[in-house]
Length: 623
Image 1: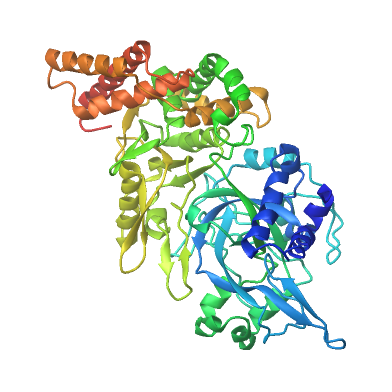
Image 2: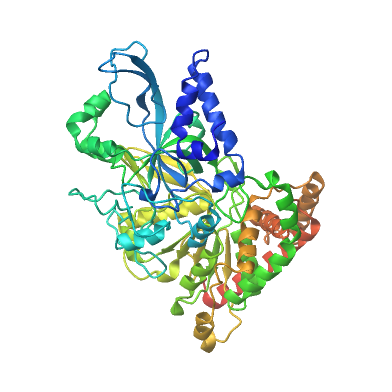
């Protein structure tokens, strides 16, 4: 059994040793044994944290052909490719022949006998993976802090600094395009995207490579992940933690530059356009290859929670649920402060942040709870401050100011580029449970062009159906999603929503600006903020059910409500009541509906509807 440093630093050595013992085994048997070995080693959390991560460590600090991990989203899937799974080499002097394993490699050894009858051609799939879009800084910091890996600079590159994060390293290496609440995103269909820069001793005379990040200004590496088995289990927009063998051979870059040699590598390369070759075989210094040994699907990317489902971590679940009522009270008090003293809006804000699509019935997504917080002051940058607070609480988020310029110029919907044979990303290509903050207070007078109308339509479909229709030129393809949308607006939003709550500040208008400027963004590392983060993420993951007894009781109560005033409540109102009751139950750690939660949901909805009617009577159709 190899020691941990052997299989982490030289995983190919482990694979080759197992391949060398294949006399009495089939190809599938030894391959399963090799994969099983690494999966078994990776079961221990201490082992997982000891493996260097492409998310934390600059590429030139990582040892080629070592085992690394990558927390990522599958942005695109390329066509399958063929490779030499087994090949034979011949020594020029002795003519001795040796069988070699070509699996988990990009470049074969020299001296290949192309006429050998022992050559085995195999197939593998390639995923184009990017860091999880909108992953917030506190998440990256927590993952980096928990890492136990120790890396030293590669021998081919000797920086004067020790281990640094990608953000620190790239900050010195390039002029980064930052995005945030104050930034307008300028785009004419090709948003500027951050790319990982190669070491300074490498130069390029070609145009910068577009790394196809969904969100403008993103940092970190993109990666070509080579998948050898069960690739049908994965789909575009899945988030994974991939463990694999890092390949950054300079030969990959050299071969990419020499188009004349491409047909020698793969006959199908001769049919590729120059754009397709550039996208599918980029320089390894910018887009490393990662040969997958094991991938762990992520049900969340909150580093404060153990990996896996809550049921997989019983002790953590029981101890954390016991604290739910007290954490809820603290968070509700904080949200009341953030929402300028509005306790009702604070309740709905909390419910919105723990909502998630838990199932689909035909085309209807169940559990979504898009919140329109209307009556937000446009002055004092209140919406931007509110987003900054949300950003500190959720693992992934994105702020989209709905200015006329952004709506008319941004690419929100991914589009297929048939020339380069890739899916060009858009800002709505987001991972599940991402918080999307739409700031309608930035709207101004003007005309939406064709792109603007298409973008607004895409946002409406996302909110109503939790799907994005990707543009494949000749047709559209539906991609289901699970994105929490929060809309801040002055009047009622022009977009649909599941719930509108007019903000009712408890401060005098003359003190509003001082109150907004006094809102504090919580400290990233405080114990209280970490409790809030754990609470919000765990509540989204909890199972929930309604007993037959409660189902009958709710049905009878609904009939009684209709008897009193048939016009006062509709089927849509009942659906909203059920969603609110579900979220109220989960917010206190209860996984089943109770009469108490149902009664409180009715009370909250009554107060909210009265407020909406009051605002409508004062302002006509607004909000």
